[in-house]
Length: 328
Image 1 (tube, rainbow, N blue to C red):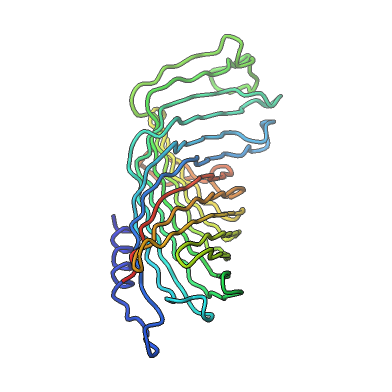
Image 2 (spheres, rainbow, N blue to C red):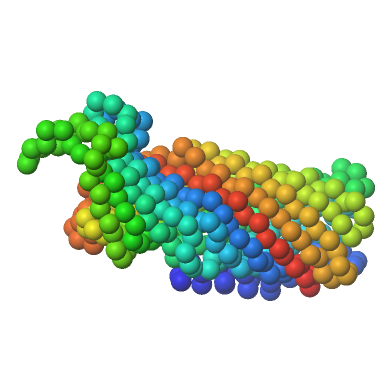
């Protein structure tokens, strides 16, 4: 709630900011309510410590299929951007509607002799929280009477929160186990594995992202009242924090990660219904991978975190929605 309050104050400041005037008003503020859906998944990774053979120790996938959202888009830009170059800025805030959103899957590779899967569990996934904040500022340049180029810097913050319930687990049997030591050798997971059924809440996960990315877009104006826009952003300037709580085993993991690559292509269509109202539809794909860092663990809610292995995170989401842009 604290983050939402800060951004609400920022929105009010944006709306209340004075609009420069040169003879006639050359810039304007517009407000657009947003409605749409997000579909994809967040990825949680644990890398091996050098003893196991597989390239990953654990992979946890959290589905968002789909999550509906609502929000607001604020824009400050030239009234007639095709006349000359100028400045623009915009802010987008999106809030997801909590609910069931597919499945959560957990895979482990614990063998020290091969790369075979040893553990698999599947649960109903629920998206508890989805929050996007994007702020962009840059310059626009008319290249032709019908073509507009924009270059900008975008700052983005995202927060996702999930929990998995019910479901089942399949676990390969260990070869020659002892009471005090894990052998690291397992029968195939298809060979009479141990099977568990789960009831209630099993696991929770929160993932927060912050990144800065340069970007550009090219708009083509077909008519006075219709245009399409292609956009693209890419950046390695990424920070991610993950918090994973295993309820049944009472263990809490905190991951601090950075780097990797973020890519986001986008497409938008807009139609001017009347002079003061535009109706738009947009679609974009936000992809982040190879973000890595250190994992820390402790008993849930008690004691200090102890440094563990290496963690990773990823994200792949398709966002599409409608906006109704009102020029003030």
